Length: 344
Image (cartoon, rainbow, N blue to C red; front, side):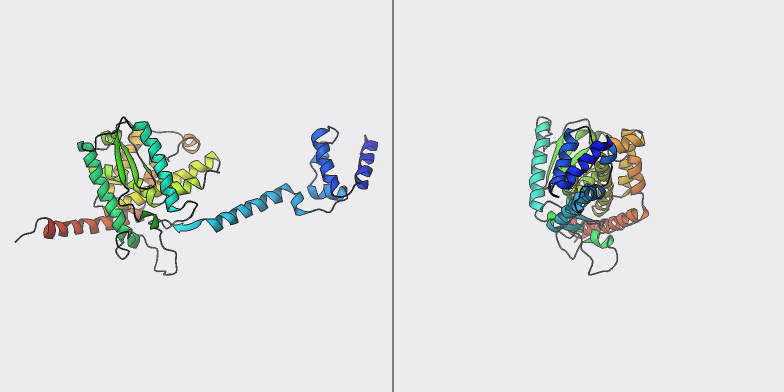
């Protein structure tokens, strides 16, 4: 065997340097004479042994690292970096507002195709009730985020982190022009859930109304979905499709917690008491029940309601929501006194 290796080494030394690696690869894939010890040797050692100067691209790990850096740089160059309103989280967005709305139209059409025979009449009292609550939430979002008037943005004012004029401002461009595009559909289904798609599309299932009786609880469910649209979570998800399933679920959990925070602020800005958010998630705990941490990490796309409740009980979130609530209720009292029922 030692003579065979000596003959093999002499043959490779006689070959031209560029041809040696190709022959080596061919032998490694077609012959069983190459020992495991040779395969375990680093690329630099093998290149020196066979008479070729080592190059960085001979190491697969360095090639993979270079490709990852190149792809990251390309993504940074082609994507927009935006700041999420209310949470001030910076993220890269791979979709333009138009592309995101087109995607939302497609997703909403698919969802409606599943429930087209189960939609509730728009004139039904339940449909009217849900639509009126949604209108309050949407109005609060437009006013609170400065869509109506950039100088009057209480939600941004309350959640502003310091007075730094040079700091990047929260992004709300994707919300402009949605006034005529908002669409809400009530569908008959036992699930106590609601869903949303970019472009102002929201679907609510009647099971939600069966479990959550008060307007404040229903308002939080809608505010949570509007929170997804404000934070452009669908665009975030599209940029993370390459992640392994376990990491993607962790990413989805963070989006739900962020939508809870934005939804609670919207709740207060719309004149609903922020404690309705805690009541909603408390009931969600009863619906979901207990399940193991393993199931939450490996199977569930949503964090357990107990975890959501823990995050939402943050003192800063509730204080900011209460400040918005007090401002909204005070404005409602003034409006009711001087405009709705004027006295002579």
